[in-house]
Image (cartoon, rainbow, N blue to C red; front, top):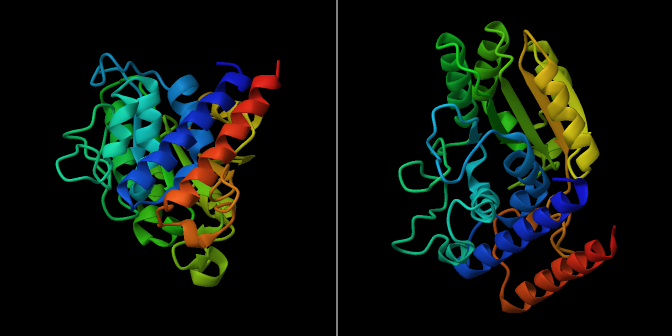
Length: 279
């Protein structure tokens, strides 16, 4: 996909996020929206995957460590063809396979269930190690929140990944600066994030999480990096694309009401209109 097609897809992913959370009357839109461009690049450009064969042995793996942003992953998987986009409206409803956190037993395309914050990266490290042991070529990607970096397990896993030189592992940090209780600097600052990963023997790349040129270049650089895992620190805007959610910590875990939903979808429709003018 070229950048324009990726921008259009990311906007569709954002529409799915807002629709799903509004329908559920619960969920986490802020951090889902901030990661939508990363999700879109991974699933439509970067990863070796096939929606028709979600369990193929040589597929690349993705682990959502910040599991509460499941609406972002679900919307991406639906738009990629793993299941119907219409099913996003069943998010968190009784009997739906689209639970509040991803479940690998029930959702096509989910490689690992998400649990407590901090645990996903450990699972991803295990997958990357298994690929090395079995001489497999697949790569492993995991997405973390910046507030999640306050969990000690993140750094145990990172220490191990660096020590074992897992160059088939890419850790992506959605660095939007806000967590459920406020600004990350005020809660329990994990900064400087890049220096910490460097200290754990990672190759580190800082990018604008909403610039597809930078996103593409970062993942290319990660592929070309040998002998050490890569950490991509993706500097993002919480609530990206929805005017009243952007940069607002209150939209970390809250669903829009009917009026707010209309405003949000109008915002995203306007983005579609602007993108349609680009050549």
